[in-house]
Length: 201
Image 1 (cartoon, rainbow, N blue to C red):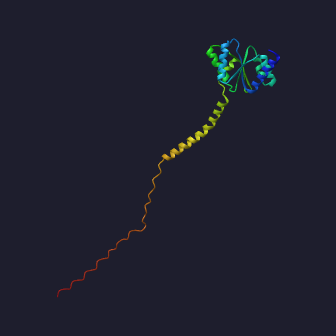
Image 2: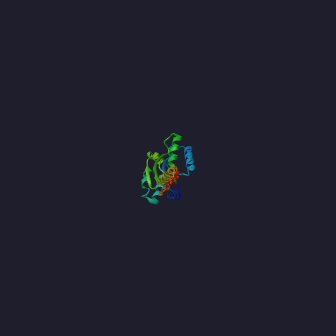
């Protein structure tokens, strides 16, 4: 590879590292050509970009962008390296995990992962990386948490309204008019004494 070709590779890598906030550094040594092709196909299906490059060129590309920011991954640049670039931080981990299950092997091996500024070093991090939350998943959880109190309030109000409808209204109390005036008492006049019959002469 000529110096110009190396510089071209470095520029391409710099563009990828600038474009993606997430990338995985994997060891694909001992994989057959057929296995590498299958791995590339899995990556393509998940919109994960796979690139194989020399470790020295990868390091130069990273150092030229921000030497301190990427310092945590330099020790992982050894053996054969394949880089997996992805917008979704979880997809490369899922691809590696499923590929290893299908092939019943331990390759590709995860050497390091750079996820939104955090560095995960070692193959033992793979399982944890398959369980991290994506941005959309986190947003969904936050929305769910915010909606829960509102739903409880609405539910309580609905239950209250239903209970109020079930309570029968009390029957109106009939008002009985009280007669204050006593009924008039009929007075009976005493009978007049009958006139005495004239005495017989």
